[in-house]
Image (cartoon, rainbow, N blue to C red; front, side):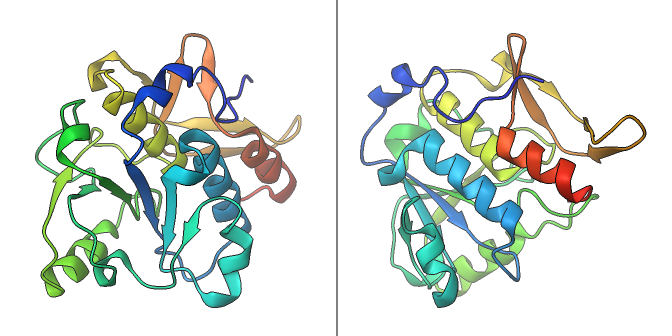
Length: 210
């Protein structure tokens, strides 16, 4: 299995607007080890300066500070403007033109239960409650791991079209000769390379569960 750690072929993406930020609104009850693995990968994909983690408990903040800017508050309480929420339920797809329209691209609840429980709607309701203006965009109609979604979004904002991507909608990780772990989410195949964090693969093989 080939893997991408976040530093693969991103040189052309450095030309993106350096003010653009990718926000992960943490919607899990804890900062699980697999979350930390994904968040580290996201930091590698967009660089530390481009990553923001919100709704992080104070006790977990230090674990993430080396990967990006960390806030205990939700994005709905931070007063940000020019916000785009990434949701598989949004009516419009993300395009390269959106890089000039929005500054903050927010991901939350994209990877969750199967079938999806639309936890991103929690974030949307909070933004509306605080009267924060935003728009929503989709990356297709299938659930993606959060780091995969960030990878796809950044490539699109860099000029790639959603239709240009090749996806696999279920991934099986071989644990040993007799066991495997199936991930029922969408992943990207770039050429012959599967875009997945090798550290997550190692974690799943050790834990045998997600």
